[in-house]
Image (cartoon, rainbow, N blue to C red; front, side, top):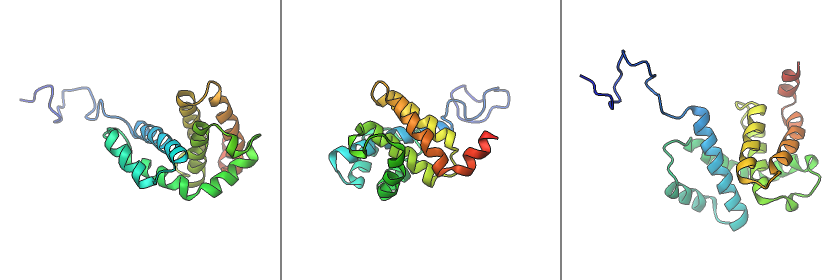
Length: 166
């Protein structure tokens, strides 16, 4: 007999076997959230990436996080910082140094995804950036992030943007 709290498959149970477990997109969203916070810390405190990563892994429950994606973002953004900032600059009406540090972290993360993660549709990248800015940014920071990413997408994902508009 299988009790209700068992992880074993019960063919009479209408719930899927993975009910209650986060989806891949939810795990990635959690990874982006932690990575954005870690990038903010990297920018503000100038700590090493390995120290920040170790601290985040100790201080946060990674059971519902795509840990590999978190690591890819955390190490990928600083590795491509010059390229990312060069891509962002034409889409800004202020300098990189004038950006709010939270919005800068969100924009760098989103730009990195557009550059490096072609498997993530540009509309998902934009939406995730907006959601991060809504939660962590200034009052209207999400509108600013949306505007910048809307300008950036056709530059970095020209074919995908054109295909979507058809």
